[in-house]
Length: 136
Image 1 (tube, rainbow, N blue to C red):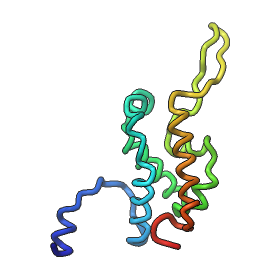
Image 2 (cartoon, rainbow, N blue to C red):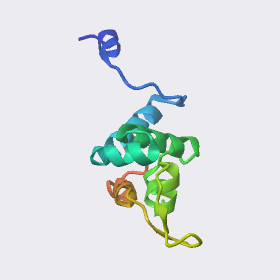
Image 3 (cartoon, one colour):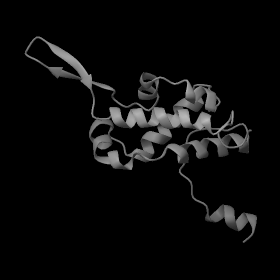
């Protein structure tokens, strides 16, 4: 199979990003693939975020890329749980109503997914590379 034939048979989702190099694009998709495991949360994601797992993961990685982190493993290792929640637009805390006047914060139903994303982001650093896929 030739290069042009291979390119025409490959269908990747369209994303509104312009990469500076092919290495950046490969790095982007490698990170998406490394952390694309939230399908078990499909129903909760649709209920709370109105999106599926793949859309949430792509949006989160796009947020990291647009934020100027360069998608480095060091950056991902240093993310807090609340930053992961914000980047992936996942509700971390819900308000539990005690009565008509008071409510208390409690962990939301997606907190386990946020924790797993946080942990897997840290694992990227343990792979031993500054950039996830391309750069040693």
